[in-house]
Length: 123
Image (cartoon, rainbow, N blue to C red; front, side):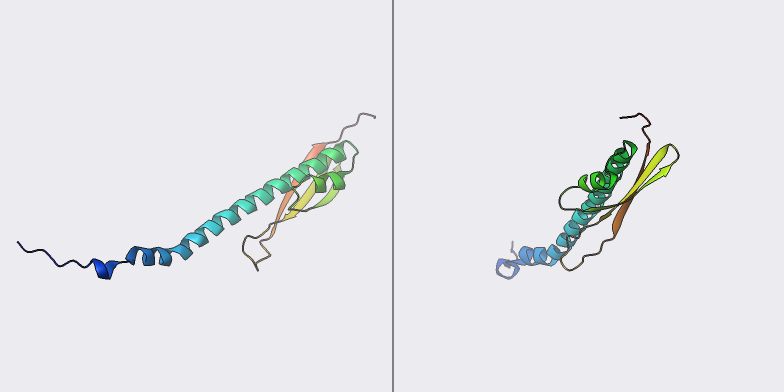
């Protein structure tokens, strides 16, 4: 019974080379996942800012200031309004979506609008 000659010397490092070839694709998928998370986070923060501004405006407070302060420190919100529509007040907030990729600064903006009933009670 004859055995095939050992070829271990020629196959050394093959797995490492295959991994190095696959590594850029893994990094691209990871960056895309993080970027999608940032997009969702910015949209959530825009909604929070709009609700805070609308609530403040419904109570005759500082809608612009409360809207801007409602987002986390890394993001900034620009708030539109308040717009009074009869017994309701509406505030719109805009948050820039940050990028995880250096050199690419524009991933757009997240816009959210919130409407609250106006509180007619006297202070």
